[in-house]
Image (cartoon, rainbow, N blue to C red; front, side):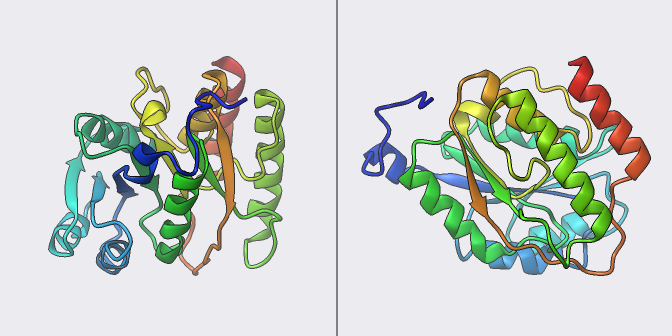
Amino acid sequence: MISNPKASPNDPDRCQSKGWVLIPARNEQVAIAELVGQLQEFLPRVLVLADNCHDQTALMARRAGAQVIERRGSGGKGRALREGWSWLASREDCDYVVLLDGDGQHDAGEVGKFITEWRRQPVDLIVGTRAPFRLPMPLPRRWCNRWMSWLVSLKTRQRVSDSQCGFRLLGRRLFALPDWRSEHFEIETEIILRAAECGMVIGELPVATRYAQEPSRIAVVRDTLRWLRFMFCR
């Protein structure tokens, strides 16, 4: 269902819309400055949410030209994104926000693809998809992503190819919603579920992903149990 049938590829408001990039980052001092610099070639407004960092992530991001919010205390990626959305919702120069991770896993050059798709289609959410899941994605992640995406598809009654990809674009109608709940990685799923529940239009866009040798920040057992609790107890 198209919730805003008046929107079109030639909609002047959408074509002239302004956006930000939001990067939740925890201890990413090695990669963050280069990432911010690359992003500014496509979208000059970059907000880095330095999430309980114990290194120079915030300093390096500021030197690279990003706006920076530093947060301390409990909570993880979900809490960081919620604080970033609240800050962006208070501004008049943010009609959409592109999310991507701060570890260099996502190709900054693909931000332009999201912006083009946003201006071309009447969508509220564009989710990056790495499906079909193949190498170099580690095998456990492939299995987990297939299973989670299948359950999210059942829940939303529409096909969701890659529910856990952090590379995505949210329109203001979505990120400015009140009462977000997630504290951690389950925020990826909450974004999709809330968009579907509100009758918003969800699109997908193929993206590349680069896997380095650094360990994943996801604690498999703990975060999977947290995700299941969120899915079936919300």
